[in-house]
Length: 288
Length: 329
Image (cartoon, rainbow over all chains, first blue to last red; front, top):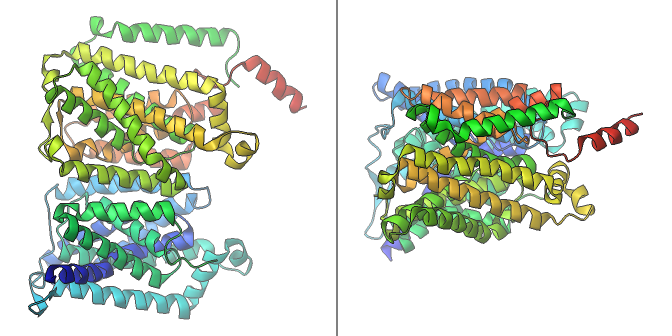
């Protein structure tokens, strides 16, 4: 019974992390209409970056985060202007294949630079528990992941609802032609969206690095998680993304509880495939 | 525009000469060259099948590795555990892949476009995880495919030649039938195709099954060559990456495309063997550049600019030309 409760709790907490992972993809998918297959790899790149910077600055994670955020914004901007803006209006296949190619390149570059061994970002929080009761315990790192993700989602909500650029983003995602008619530079809006997505990706990257070990190829796993979050939660809904993350986290933890640790990822995939088949617009999709 | 008259005859003669050269390859080439061509043939088959799905049927699959893995594992299990002949094992591998494709088709065809692509990918990942935890296939330990130890490179080469050339012939035949026309109609506009009476679901299913079967067979021979199989590599995305890169660079939606792409792919891999990963980076960069600059790939662009088509899916060029010229008057 305690194990079940623990699984449920971990599922929810992990769900927060998954939500942040999926946020970037949800933004890009919702506003630009394309799935960035390199999203997982971009997250992992920021993880590696944070690791390198943290090692340089003797474990100071704040600096690592700042530098990684800045670097990711630059990378995102480059990807956007060189690659994605050229194909964003050419249909579904070119962006898919370009981001696929990008993913391949990123994974292999990481492998050349860092090798194929598992790495992790050292942090003293990883092994500690914040709350320990006879029935369940909450590990510090999971809690931090969850709290940070809530903060990120709230900030993003604020940005999109209350700022000028937020309105520009909402307008562009609603109707590109109309937005251009009222004078919005939609390609610039896309660039800002990409920048926002990259910021969430670098935050996600740091959290992932602190919570789990990673390889250059871990990107694929997080891509599928991000995709799962977007699909389950539905597009265009930040709350949906959070709930999507939680549902995915729960599915994984419960799968692990009922079928064994080895099936954790597997069960997540099965749930994702089921939702793709029966309700691809997501559980919480906004009707447009 | 394809070649007419003498140019067509010339290209046919060149084609025949190429085939003869390929058949006699082991007689005049070095063993390492034979090995290279072996790989070219097999990758060409995988590429042709991906092209069939994505270039002609409009189904972008990122999950071809499912079938490669299934084909490879059928070979491994049937020869190692049940001691069947490897040819039988390879054929069964194709059938297993086809059956698997059939089983996943109802849910997977409900997914459209990018969802389909990622869905196929997720299925492959799930398959890999399942095999890692399955005692029947020895979990992650994998199999040494010992039947391969008795085989020479030439044996494997002839096997791969059959599969490679066979895949080209298969695609050619499919495209020349009504099914091929249906495919191209579907690719260009699904709604219009359905209005014209094309059974979308059945056509897509047939093509999916065919491509799964051939990819499975190719996977079996690929693993006969590698002679060791384990789940992570067998179901690795790298197989699909190879297929995608081969077809994009060679020319998506053309029959010669995968041939050219496979040659480039294998040669780059061999050249940069000492720098693992570099070949993939270069291939990725080339592929992205091609999509941005010449989205029809090498053969596609040649086709567009010079009307140069060696293997044409169209049936009678004179008739077509006559039609076109009267329309554009």
